Image (tube, rainbow, N blue to C red; front, side, top):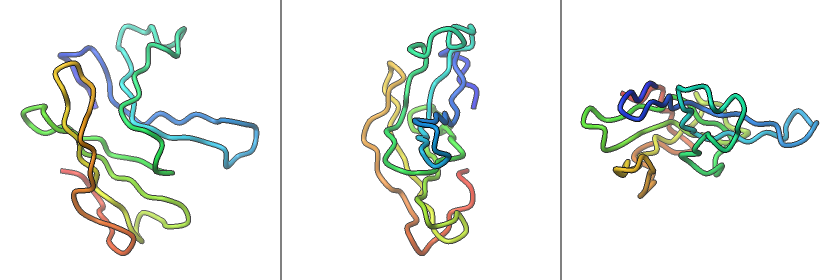
Length: 113
C-alpha cells in the first residue's frame, strides 16, 4: 500500500530467522521509497509486532487515521479463521491501540475494505 505523504510503501515483511523453513517472522512494515532499505535494514519501520504467524492486506482508512490488516495463526488456514486487526496511525506514522475489530478462530475475514 503506497503512503505518498510519507514516501513509504506499507507491506508484509517476511524474514527468515534461521535456516529451518518454519523459522520465519512476519510483520507489517513501512519501507522508504528512496531505496535506502536496500542497504540499511534499519531504514525499515516495523508497524506491528510478530504476535501472529501470518498477516496480509494492510489498508488505511480514507482519512489516513487508521490501518487494518488480516492476521491468523498456524495451524489455521485463512478460510478457517482470521482476525481483522485495527490500529490508529499517529502523526509520526507509528501505530497505537491495536485491537481485533472482528473475526476469530471460527470466522474467516477474507478482505479488508
